[in-house]
Length: 419
Ligand code: ADP
Image (tube, rainbow, N blue to C red):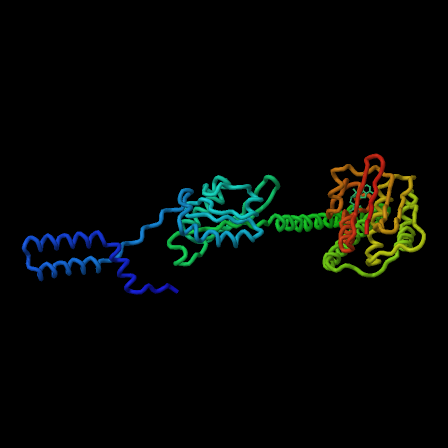
């Protein structure tokens, strides 16, 4: 609500403003009186002049100059900016406040961290050179309407921002004609990365299924056509077709496993599972495969129990995957060693060690990505789907456990699960 000033106060203020003109009017009256004019006439003249001056309209408010580096100290900006800035400082997304000449009046700490310090009062282009952002800011200042664009930064790391420029509504009283604008940067790099991962995943899964399907179709056409009466060839083709369908169903099983794990990733399992019998069970289940590839699986277990909180079936899946990989990618004629460590006051650890060719260091950080394989042909020939370690990682995340991979080319690889 506007505060009411008493009429006497207003009158005194007006007289104060017009004091010079009143003084001149008084001087004219005195001169007229001394020149012999009738006293009543002089008084009447004086009254008319005083009334004319006091009834004249008050002077108009001057138009505020645009905010520039030199005028930032103007009262309006000085009185409003601290309030706006205090609120924006608390935001964890980069935000800048700019004036109608596109000079930066404020940037919060998140903006300083993302884009570096900016000289207050400098034009926005001193910090942000993207023509897209500059055009958008210009348009918002001209139209007083919000706008947004997507903007990528390559340095220091690749980031994608949704940048929005909008006028700050100060209210007619507070703003007093001056306009401020806000530039906010929402980091959408993670959303974009997940989008890309999802579309890569769909593309990879379709590709993995399309290959065996195309091969099945080819064999069916051959059996129906050129090999119609060649029973020997037909038998061979049916064997390959059987392998392809097995591969497809393994892939579908792994995909379903992954999606089930994703659904319950936030619920930690709380069953008590003893790893000693569990590892023995996994080794027994893998004996036929180990025999086929000529590898021995040796268990090194401690005395007594080694209990962890977990889901038994999922932990079986983890150690099956790790031991199967060690057998598949390990060296023929050599052993795969499985160590279970359960010392007091240290985390329970299971390490699967092979003496295979090892994994070059650049591949190690990516092994748990879906469909990531060091050598695609090698993995396919060993009936791999490229999803085994991704499943392992999902299960371990749910179990609050870590997977540590150490590998030396030419010597072998170790996968450690630390609970
Ligand atoms: P796959 O079904 O192809 O085995 P995984 O997700 O289980 O998929 O493993 C991903 C890739 O990691 C494998 O294709 C292989 O290149 C590599 N890899 C996994 N375990 C080992 C290992 N013990 N020794 C060497 N390479 C391995």
